[in-house]
Image (cartoon, rainbow, N blue to C red; front, side, top):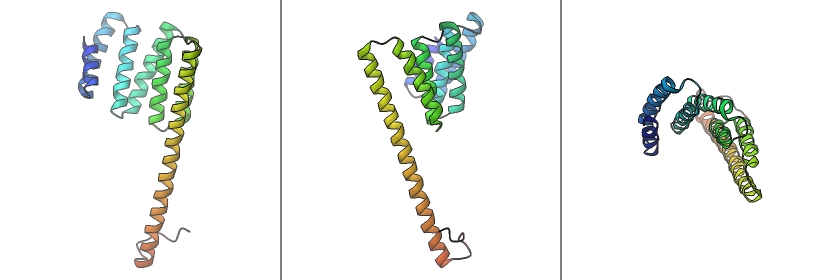
Length: 174
């Protein structure tokens, strides 16, 4: 019940209440089911996803990694739930700006998903990955453009300071 309440609060955007209920669910489920059970893995995954929505990416990563490791132990490597776990890790890494790790995890998810997909579904999955990569590259390009613009703005501001208030400005950069 607490896990379901956590889902409801998460859907409502009340992440603190969601986490509180997931923690209660984890405590109870661990007592009843032991340390390693698919239900426990699901709760860890829910915790990770909610932390991610709060921008708490380190906590999200830790919980999703626990969920994935437990899931692999119970289900094996080739299961759609494991693909979802890798996809979640890819998302968290991308939000942290760790794009290489994100790409590795997205590729692992795609590889597992492809095992269960027919040709049409594989094309849909590949298109989805291509869109994600395109969005990722666009984000990197936009980030670089912003950094260049910001640097140019700072150089101009420094030049103005140098002209009118030489003692406040950094030495001429270029």
